Image (cartoon, rainbow, N blue to C red; front, side):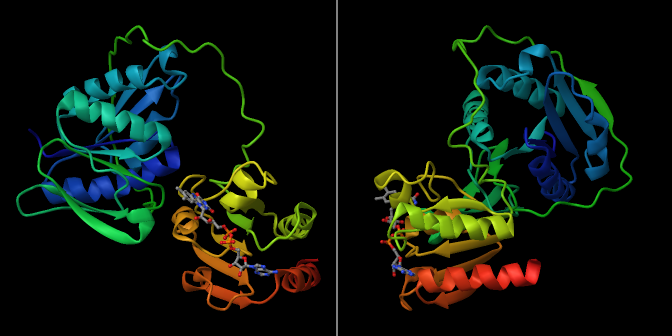
Length: 318
Ligand SMILES: Cc1cc2nc3c(=O)[nH]c(=O)nc-3n(C[C@H](O)[C@H](O)[C@H](O)COP(=O)(O)OP(=O)(O)OC[C@H]3O[C@@H](n4cnc5c(N)ncnc54)[C@H](O)[C@@H]3O)c2cc1C
């Protein structure tokens, strides 16, 4: 087996982060970094060499226009054949995680999920760190069987700067299997899709809000900050005031700025906001857990703090 690294994600931003880490791992192994692109009418396969990829393996077919785990797995196995990787990095998106499990099973190897750090140990095994127990502990795992497969969430590794790299484009000849699952209909998401995952600013409501109408306060603040509005689970699942909630059983978000209003900060909620860059809390209870994980805490009644904040921001931003 060669000492190469193969990276894949259907999310281009995440893929570039994987290439940054992948290059580091390939260099430490003395192998090369390769990347897999799967899709229909792929036009930008040349760009990835700038991030250190030697071979861009391209599976381009109308049959790949929509994600199908069976079809994508076939493309992946062809890419493994063509690039002989020791390490496989897959973006830990919903699709990536589904695919990683199938690829690992097909290659009869293991899969470490949602790794936040990765390195190669002295024996050439891949060592990864991942959060467990809703993010309250860090587990260190060692993959002992190659090819080592790891899935990586967004922003675990930095986006590298593009360089001068020159790479080769290799077209993969994949025969797409007859799908065992037939897609009957595709519909765009309308309700429930608040775009929370990609939002740079989120203001979020918890049970500190006494009535549904009071959410207008938060919506007004969101308007001023150009933010998305989220909430804790009881606001959605119990009270039905909003569609989606944030947390371990809901949406996982990673904004630059997360404002938690009247949210106590239970472990289930915090698991969904841990990747936020700055967390600010407004809670009248000085001992609320949310303050523990906040960068800035405002201890006070949200019904007093929010109008004052909106007024101050309007004066500042205009
Ligand atoms: C299996 C499982 C999965 C779960 N998944 C999730 C999940 O994904 N996401 C999630 O959010 N929860 C989840 N939960 C629920 C979680 O355990 C908590 O019950 C929930 O997060 C609490 O929501 P909250 O903070 O809004 O409410 P509370 O815990 O009731 O907190 C309300 C807070 O508001 C403050 N407050 C009250 N009035 C005011 C005021 N006027 N001004 C300022 N502050 C005020 C209080 O001091 C308190 O801290 C899950 C639970 C289980 C069992």
